[in-house]
Amino acid sequence: MAEIEKKDDFFEKFAAFFRNIFGKGDSGFAKLVNKLCTREIITYLISGVLTTVVNWLLYYLIIHVILGVESKTNYTADENLKIHIGNTIDWILTVAFAYVVNAYWVFVEKREGFSKEMKKLLKFYGARLLTFLIEEGGMLLFITFLSFNDIIVKVVIAVVVVILNYVFSKLFVFAKKE
Image (cartoon, rainbow, N blue to C red; front, top):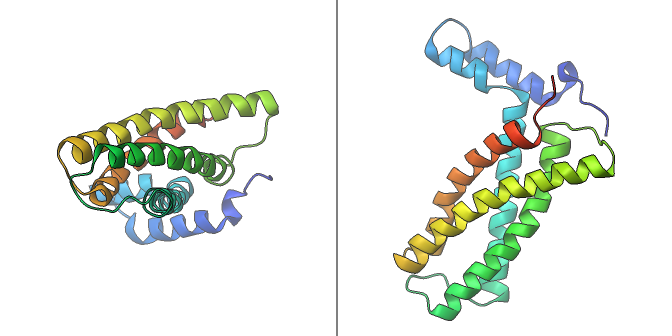
């Protein structure tokens, strides 16, 4: 995949457009806009939405269609087990999708040979494993022990997970070597 030329990239132009409108001056808001309105953050937000949609669709299909668990509160032990097994399968598939989108669209990584790609992939899965454990812990706490609705819990936890995934991807997996 060819490197994306920043000046000709649609998302860089989109970010520049917003920086020109909202990022003028020395106010705290203008500084925040200039810091956050970048091609990388815009494409990460879009890829985060796409990855979340993939995650939720797979979750619904696996848990509610394939495994036949009804969305409610007070799940049986069998239903709780199905939810956690289904969520694990969903996670594995979703992370594979997220890696491709993040590596080649958001952080615009060049392919560096099989061993380097595998190292990045393992780092990506390792970072995502940490956020998966946070997700599973939250689901265990709020669904299994506190009897919250699984869909509501999934939505709230998704916000936390998206933020953490960006931080880990930016600082650990796709960190640019200066």
